[in-house]
Image 1 (cartoon, one colour):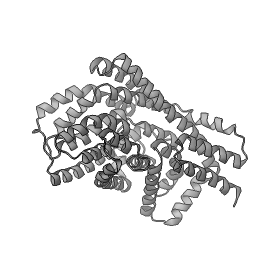
Image 2 (tube, helix red, strand yellow; image 1 turned 180 degrees about the vertical axis):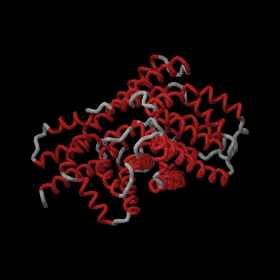
Image 3 (cartoon, helix red, strand yellow; image 1 turned 180 degrees about the horizontal axis):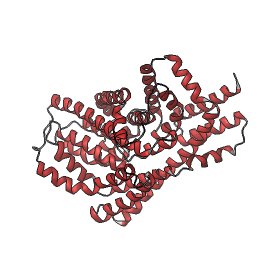
Image 4 (cartoon, helix red, strand yellow; image 1 turned 90 degrees about the vertical axis):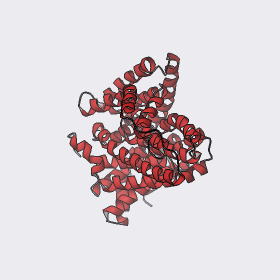
Length: 433
């Protein structure tokens, strides 16, 4: 075995072993990188140099701002407003509260950008509400956790910023615009699945639709939804960068949460900021260590070898696209979202581009695959949160989620094989796709 192949085996092998042994992911990335550098005979000063280089990016400054915005808005009393808005829009349907759950997640995801935050905040309100109205507890939990993944696709999403930085040369604004239609497609597929189950189980309808009531709730929720407009319109319109828009959105979120909705006092603001620091520490450590990990991948020519391996299985673009999705889904079962984006993007993006998949479309594919991974054992962070919020055994929640996995996979396949679902909006706004 050549020295390069041995170093590759040490890097990837030690990383996977530590992941399966349930090491913290940052330790897995860091230790495997150190072992690889030693096997390559490189000075370990390379590690801190590459870690600094990994976070030395102006666009990455948007990540802490978006996370802070999501925490402030999520803690600031907007959940009730968005649930009421969704109820006025789709609550009249059979299985109305399930539809409300899905649509509210679309709205809330555009503010929090986090599936975990969506599940924790909306789930704590909607799951008991659904159970009280006669919905099965496991079904209610399944709807909540699967719909929370819409927030990963609907901007502003800090995971999209991480992907753009990792992929290099991709506009954050373009990826933001690309997420709207896939997010709506995912919501629609989940609504169809929920409707079929609701009709079969005779779940209740809500009150009759009232346009006047919808306008009233839209007015009440305007201040929350305006945060999305600040970010997206500002970035797409070229008024400011993603980082600048995120900073402005933090100030706006603080004003709305404290002075308009009054869901936070100043003590609550400090608690929210403490929560942000905990999250940011994990995310930024991962990004910096993944920079060093990526350095090893590049020096060992792993992306080229992976491309040759995958294309060696088949030259059919359809088969290659399915293989890419399968790899991402398997990674999602054992790893969290940020490390998958940071590690898999440099390896799989060249393969995707070789079969004509745009980097923007591939970004949406990566995010959705990772979202599905958040719902699957053994790692499945959102699955664990949903089970804890609903106080339901995880295995029963997984069983209830099976029909929704099918809905999500259908949405994933449509996004994979119909590029315009992801690329139409960015092209309309003048982005190169």
